[in-house]
Length: 128
Image 1 (spheres, rainbow, N blue to C red):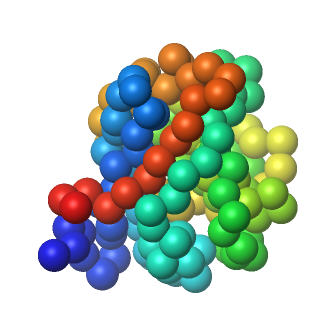
Image 2 (cartoon, rainbow, N blue to C red):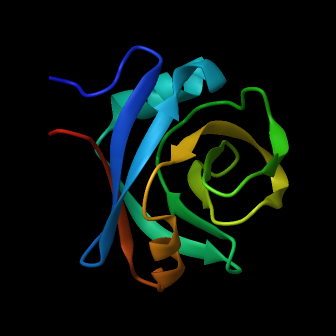
């Protein structure tokens, strides 16, 4: 049974061997992109940092941009179509490239500051 609703999907982001966070993807923010991501679950990719404000993961997801923006708030989740990355914002910051807002980090945000080269992110559906 899937946890969530038609408009919101509850997911778990795991930083292998370190921590996990609760995520919420919101379909009304970007219906096509969120749908494509949900069909791709589970997702696994290398974890990276941009300064101390943005953690992101590489994916193979192919989706165009929807409702693009450059300003993001602490806890936001964005999808960067140009390189298929899912980005996790740890501070209120502008993005260097326009991306699609797809959801929110619901718990344990500060643990992303522990991302190191070689770490792996995995996104799975909550309750599975």
